[in-house]
Length: 311
Image: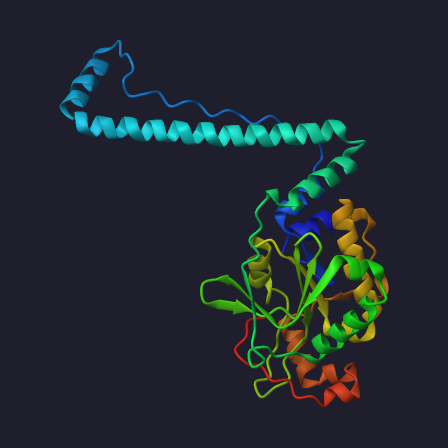
C-alpha cells in the first residue's frame, strides 16, 4: 500500500500506524496551482417580469399574500448576501495561494509555504477540550511509562526534540459532550499541533482480561481524533520495548516529513514493522501470556489497573 493510501485510510495493516488530518494531507499532496473558485449563481428576486400567462397568475397570487412575499424576498436577499460573502472569502484565499505559488521555487516549496500559512494561526483547529486529569483518572500501562521516561531522557539530549516538542502529562481530551479520551502520550509541537501517541497491547492484564487493539478496534477512536485535527501515531507494545529507539526515530522522521511536505522521506526501519493482530490472535496471545515474553521482568510485576477509560 502506498504512503498516501495509508494516510487516507483507517485500515492500516502494520505497526507503526500513523494518521494525519485531512487539512494537512491536502497541503502535503497538493499537486498544482490553486484554481479560481466558481461564482455561484445569483438567485433571481421574486419581482421578475413574467411574459406568460402562468407568470401573470403567479403575480396575482403573490399580491394576495404580500406578507409572505416580503419574507421570501428577505430570505432571498440573505442567501445572495451569504453566497457573495462566501465567494469573496474563497477569492481572497485563492489570491493568497496564487501569490505563494508564483513566489515559490518549486511545488514542494509552494507546499511548505502553504503549510506555514496554515499553521500561522489564520486557520482554526479544534483539538477538542484538553484538560488536566486527576491522578485517579489517569491509568498508565507499563509500555506508556517506559516510553515516556525514554522520551524525557532522550529528548533532553536531542536538540530537534527539545526545540519542536512539549511532552504533556496527565491530560484528558473531550472530543464530544461528556466523553473523555485519555491518550497514552501527548506531544504538542511548536506550531500548536497535537500528536496522540498510542501504545497498543494485544490484551489487558487485569481481572477482566480481554482482547484489545485488534484489527478495527480503534477505527472509531482514530477517526474522532482525526476529525479534531490530531495526528495519531500507534506503536505495538512489543515495538516499544524491543525497538525503543526506532519508535523514537519514527516520530522525529514523521514530524520532519510533514513540515517538509514530502512523505517520501519517511524513514521506517523494516526490522521493527509488525502486523496488527486479529481478535482471534489476540485471544491466543492472552492464553499463552505472550506479553510476559517481552515486558521486562521488573515491569511485569506491576499491577495495571484500568479505570473508566476509552481506548
